[in-house]
Image (tube, rainbow, N blue to C red; front, side, top):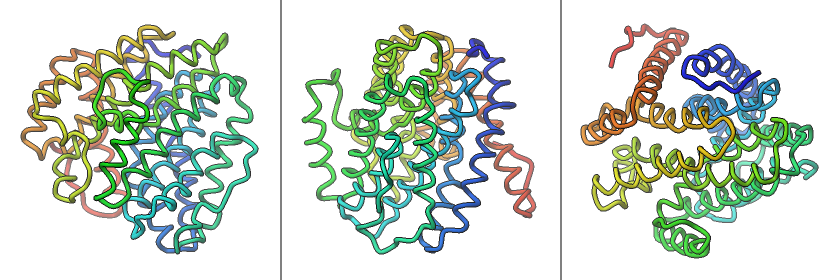
Length: 368
């Protein structure tokens, strides 16, 4: 199975191959989540699946790099992203502000990338304990996928580097507000010498994505995958593709985060002009890194797809300044971005309408 190199083959494979598989695996995790004994853990596990399905859908497109092993890649991606989304819910909505609690929870993400490591008690610093084996099952699913991976040895170092960044971010950004910025800035300074020029909040954004992990896992199924290629994939996705991904995520959440008093990395730009310039810089740097990879057309479509997926979010429509800048960015990125934007716009609204219909509520015909 070839890696898609044009819009129509990618759209066809995504709609008829990737998305049904994602939903099949998510349905299995949803059923397991419903059986979690602790009501708080059960509530957060189910909420993370219901409200963040698109994270698994978007990440799983990278499974198209895995060729005939696509189903294995999707299974890993869905399990690992479900861990990420579940823990994010636990930390965001936790009554705890204990960094040791957040670090203990995120041990699961490191263990998931280390076949043979016995699962631990990830809830040891919190009152809620009994998840019926839910998080351990997710960890073991990822471990099993990596045990069978023919190139695990070539990608293990990069997987752990990216996961280390991600887990550190989750600890630093969920502590109490007085500690948050000093911790994030000190963390940035400890890595600054190994980074291209960027701000502390851009570095934090770069660490908050799982796309590099998914790309490495899927890409490494290809023949003649080398240590050098693993390095080039990691360097292309971190910081640039991952940074663009998370900056866009925060971009569409600006009003929501402002009202909720939550941390938003986009709020630290001086103004919208600087934000647009930096988004453009991340986009262009990502394209340069992608050009050095096999199947660069596929990765370029991923890069443009990120813009489309986030800028088609309903939250953009509700924010006048955000909507204006979003439309400007879409126009500047050409026909491929517009194609994906329209595709994502209609898919989101049809999906929302279908979900409401299945829930037994009378739903209007989707509109803007």
